Image (cartoon, rainbow, N blue to C red; front, side):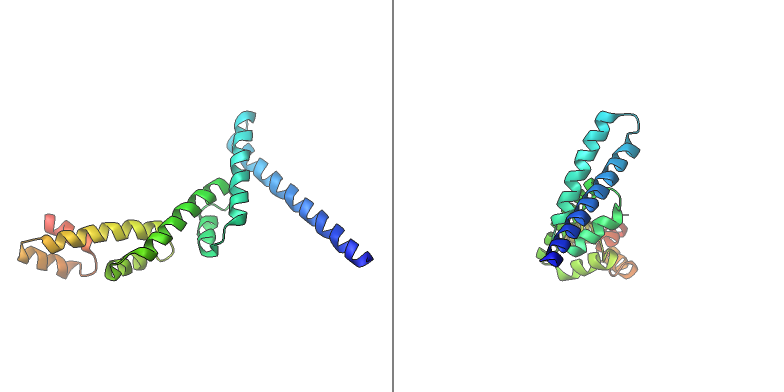
Length: 158
């Protein structure tokens, strides 16, 4: 019984200490951003606290790592990046053109928002090149950029 009570007390103090450490870190972030504006410090602290709590509950470890790498000391930005990356990851799972998807993934293997951007650009350019009528310029563009429809389109339009 004493052992269990000791463990409970230790966990309580550890948790309490961790919460104080997080709170201090969030206050420091706010103070660094607005050293002379207490109202803005409170506002930033609240944003950081919401971001921290959000990031503590997220489930996609891969996307969480992307967000934490981009903004290691800014939890509100981690939340923003996590939401953007998570949405783009879902989008990339749903795309249908595997060739274009491969182009996007090859260019940005660890950034789903950039994969989505590249996928959309490449897909649009691929459709353009399919409709392009000048066979000679089309062939030249394919030779110069066999794996990049955006660049093929660029060459074609020159």
